[in-house]
Length: 189
Image (tube, rainbow, N blue to C red):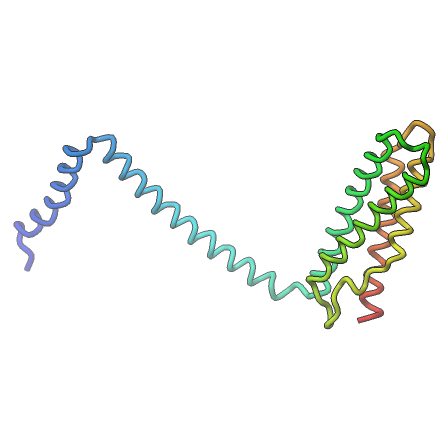
């Protein structure tokens, strides 16, 4: 049976340690230490709670998404980013004020489109579908297609680059490329 003396001794010891710490380090340091410990415990509790929530959500979605759906999301992200990247490059080329030298401009646009195509293929190399790398489903004719659209809109109106009109054409072309990519996946895999 526990006596009153044992309860008092066990309750007094932590209080004595706290009092000793206050006398040695000061009350603000001890309060700061308690707050740090309390914050750490709360932080750990919330991390465990978020980990449990993440595991529940990821286990739900992991069983639902198919490889084809994952590929569609990936290709959509890659091609949508390419639209904006190409627009930035075309705008930069237009404002460099060298449009009178059509061969140089054509080479710049070709280099941009080719570099974007090769970069996309290198990213797709990391993903497989039915044993084939996704880069196998890319078509080199896309470079020429995007190059022609870019050049057409650089020279559409003299002294003016219509961003909306150029983006509409690039958007339409990349949406067609997305469909071609998807059809290549279905037909070649």
